[in-house]
Amino acid sequence: MSDPITLEQLHHKINIQQQSATQDSYGQLVNTWTDFAANIWSFVDPTGGSEFYAAQKVNAEATANIWLRYNAGLGAKPSMKVVFGTRIFDILNVMNWQERNKWIRLVCKEVV
Image (cartoon, rainbow, N blue to C red; front, top):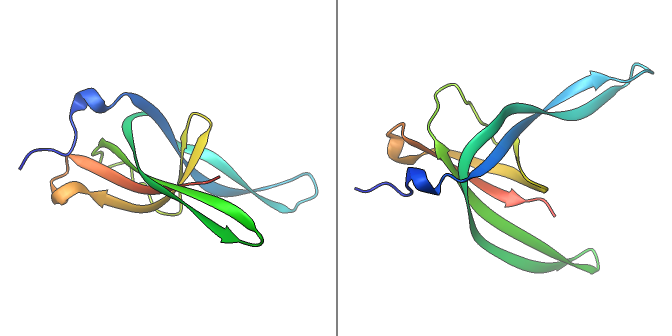
């Protein structure tokens, strides 16, 4: 079976961020996002979008698959997010494509 993408398609750079808690000057815990992995070559593949009516306004939702080369040490999790330029994506699922340790597919939803 052929690969879902080629190396030539990895022309987007992303950062994967994780949430961490730090203390502010008053001793209160503040949640911040810090880079877990930076400048990763990837392929951002938009898969769809929708609009829905909630809370008396129209909301938009966009989804994407973000492909990157397998890296055993990466350890991306659904609690993390992807930053692609000015766009932010919540990671919904992390998949090792066909369990072949060659490609990782991040199933994501754009935060709008």
